[in-house]
Length: 253
Image (cartoon, rainbow, N blue to C red; front, side):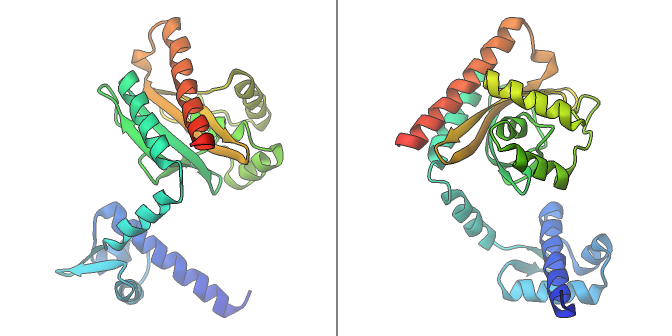
């Protein structure tokens, strides 16, 4: 790779990090960005000027924020999924029916990306939000999706992303994970028993198509509400029904 190519890649990384930091901080000035990112103020200022000319950021009273162009980008990304309305309606219904947080996710770059999220009347706040990503090996959505992937693809993801322990319950052994993926395939749903977040349980079911996985749908709730065995039997059935509705409507809708 040439020095020029290296500089081009570095420039993209810096601009991307500026965008993510502006999102995280809800706007920032040159000095704050330089301190947070470890670059000189002149470097950050040059990148901000370029981003401003591209209408990706807006400058207000010395502070920079993301422009409304990102709403257009978000709308375009959403519309790439022809079954988005089906997913939204079914996830909303699942959240209302269970009273908990329901979500739909897909795999991107070896991680779980959240496409849609809905909170029921008892839903607790979770770290996930639309557009964010989480580890694939420790989430029920991720394990549900991986269970229907070719083993080579799963190995590729784990080689790239690793199997970091999120909690004491996280599966960090590859052989153990593959054994669980086989069980998930057989029973039709995946369980995250405080593997990603302490105190939070989650069950997910895959949504597949003739061309491969579309993603997975899940419901999360605090461990304090697990209740009886009947609850743990009823919840997977509800989630798998929702996944089946999405699957059928996506196929024949």
